[in-house]
Length: 107
Length: 119
Image 1: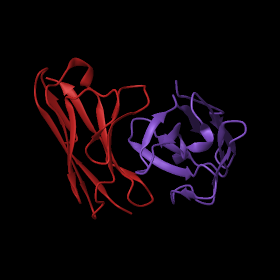
Image 2: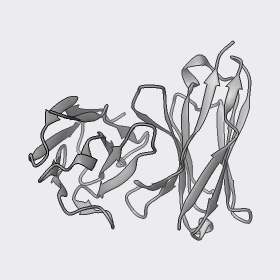
Image 3: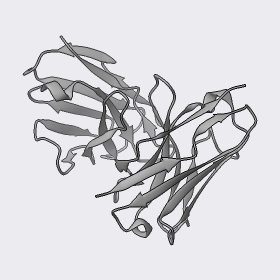
């Protein structure tokens, strides 16, 4: 199975901050990497697919980058509605696996 | 508007069975691959099963293989998950999830249904 390592597991940030979350995979997955946002008690929401493609309707302050084994999700200017948990997922090979999540909290 | 509505969750004893259903609307169900993803209380996401649009390709996570069966009825726009030999570690919110094209990501999720396995 492909192992996913997200870092950090949590972070505190202020509105307006630039935030970067990292996801590292145990083997090359080319660009089969997806990012989701999840708020408490809600289903996840798709942000980025194919490592860097922004899902329709997602604000442009979200961006994804990376190829191979190292990937990043960046929020260019954190907004109040962005406080949530973020997950990466690889879909290169089954079982499709998720990172453990990064909780973004208010400083 | 894409809608995925799960049902069938509840409390079940260890070793018991449960069948989850997902009613899909707002899109051409027969054209999309579908998934089940679960989330144990306070934990992260776990993909557990995939079925292709025509049911010819099915995958399972090792944690449920041999116990769970995914199926779909394209005529009724419905997805199902038959869960047998349930264990305490199967306790989770189960999400019905539509597959995006090409990269096997999930582009739409249901609201989830809670399955609790406990005596």
